[in-house]
Image (tube, rainbow, N blue to C red; front, side, top):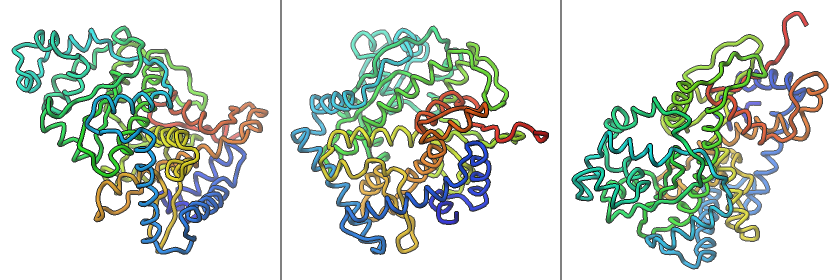
Length: 445
């Protein structure tokens, strides 16, 4: 139990309680021990593929992981015929392939008519100045609406955006949304200025998104090592993520069911729709989980809290991560593109994989290795993507392989696909910020 707790970044007591309570709910008492055995075997296979062993020095493991990461770039350059990272047509080709791999359905996104109303009510002064327009009407007559909206986060002041421009979001209604496809917008830094370049330097990648609009945004950049890997993988990630949030917005628009585990809920009206939407776009995470009798809870962790504050006490809690789910699927999409290629295929189903080499936590997670490499030789290896993926893996293991059949016979929920359970409950319980499982009917039964 100690080793798995360390891999998860929690303590033994928390994991033991989880094991007891979830074991009672699913009738599977040994999931943590079984998962640790699987991880040990998977890790040996992974280091073997790298030409190393379980006793190899950490420095050698990191070097081998870096080389395997660089291999992905070489494979993508070959697949896409040496794409120019500054060329709009090449970027559009990458997006088209990403879209074909993910196959996201049309989603529920903010109507363009409403976006125009927001811009006219609160003109973006820095955008108008940058492009030389005297009014919003002139701006919208000559520029692409979604491109202008995408540029807000780069050119306008954060305080103004949060306190003024986005304030009307609190009054949005379901009728302000419509069904349409996810689209790409390219923001050329020559047009939009240094703010776009600053974003790239800060983030180590040139891709972002707008959940409420269904837009994936790319900033063309000069080629540097790994830029195609980062751009293409982020496209895959955001297509999966935006699709997830589109499903979430549809749920916000519907009355909520009563919770299966006895957690009180209420139906959603229009005011609730707007509040839930704003909370989701902010990436809110509960400050605490309410203490509910006979309920074992998993926090829905919208953001990577470890990236913001590695000492955040919420990182000790059992949790599930939408981000880790989107990345797992994005890496599966990558592997589908290069099933027989040693770089692209290496990372599939290893999002959760980590281990201790020379007593230091080491991640076999794709994102951790890609962005550690992008940070340069002095950047310590990131591990927070791996930890969130491992919490997801622990959760899904409780509901894989027909686990629910035993519970179903006793009137409990029946599940047989852990990842589907994860996504379904994550969406359904998103507004309360946690998933609760009823671990015992009452003290008298």
